[in-house]
Amino acid sequence: MRRITCILTLLLVCTPAALAQWDFVRIDTGLKAALSLGPACSAEIAYMLEQNNGYVRHARIPLRGSAMISPVSEGYFYGPLDIVASATGEVFINYHDHDVENQIVAVGTSGSWVLEEIVDDGHDGWDNYLFMSDDGTVHTSSVDPSSFNGRGVEYARRSTTGFWSVEGVGSTPIMYGNGTALGMNTENQPIIAYFNDTTTDLELAERINGSWNISIVDSTGDTGRFPSMIVDESGNVHIAYYHAITFDSGSIRYAHRSNNGWTFTEVDTLTNVRIGSTGARRIVALELADDGQIHLAYADRYSVKYAVGTPGNWSIETVSDFPPSGQATFGQQVDLARCAGDGSIHIVFHELGAFGAVGDVVYARQLASVSVENGPDHKELKLEIYPNPSNGSVFARVLGPSSLPSHLVVSDILGRIVYVDSQFMQGNSVFRIPSDELAPGLYIVQVRIGRETLTSTFIMRE
View 1: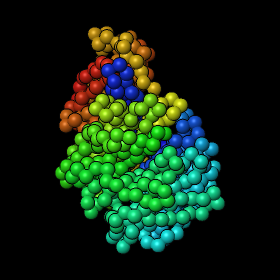
View 2: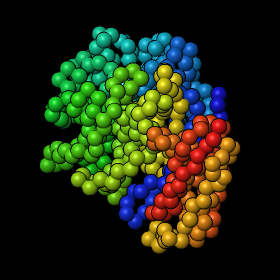
View 3: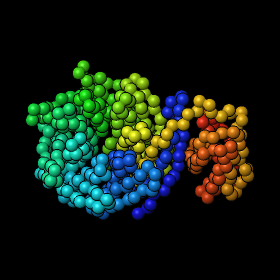
View 4: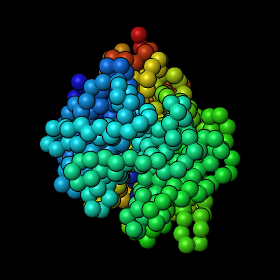
């Protein structure tokens, strides 16, 4: 097992008046990570390895401190999975166990895990979503897929004694691979959003007066995959989901139901989406703040993005991206959580290797925004590169008055990022650019300080 390693910090513009700072942590080998925030906003992360001898693991990352990784289970698993943490620190992880063809809920306390099997007819637990209601009851939504003669969307509820009851919600039989989302209405009754692959519509199953009611949310083309849903305190329903336009492109759409019915808005477009077992499984995650601001994280193969705002007024950042070079891509499963204490945003995603599905789980935490209203004057800053040319280490020195984070990015002439580093600048900053993996050629150096970007080049010799 690889231990936690900090890899980079990038500065990204969130609004014209503030800069959002992200910490990135590469956690472990794994796929399809899910995220919840525990006490003191510790990151509770679940992930898996999808192999015959695979595993499910849990990582806890406090706001200050190193990650603590614990094994949950070993066996033959398929994702996605989900996780939820209670206010007292108890953690629940839900996943599909391919060996027993049922869904499992792992209950963790102090790093010790008890596995609860949700026993039901069929091939259960695909596209699962885990939810904890205000009274501490744990609920799941999932799919018993049509490819295994299953009945479609299912709902499960855990009793106070750990007994699980399962029921169908009345959907038509549907395939796995497109996600479900679960919430509770003001009467503590379940609401489940899902994609009907037969009609290509976004549908909603709601328990009303003891029975399930199915309605269509959006039927505009091929729409509704990978829903993420929040039901607010007034009972209004908020759903973010993927609307397919072509085979590999589409948009992130947001739908809101109030007393006046449904309203819809486009948030952003994605152009490199891959649907499939190693592709998209939970492409968008939604959080809703008390002030009404909507927070979204979403991804295609080459970018992870974060959007915040209200319908028609979105501020969008690229949290992380790769050029389409075949080196590494994203697994297109993201999860997002917002800390109520400081308002920080937490995101998890995974990278895929160039030739297989095994990848790395990455955690991104948004640090406090830094005001740049009185940022440094570009004329007072200077970037020096030495020695240049070089056949060994290269140093980038920033000279000038500043007390802001400084962030260095080194790219080759094709625009591929080869090195990233960060410091907090106190007058001057000196970055050492290691040459171990740099091929001979020309490289571009950019250092961002506040709103200013300094650019230079250097040559690496044989």
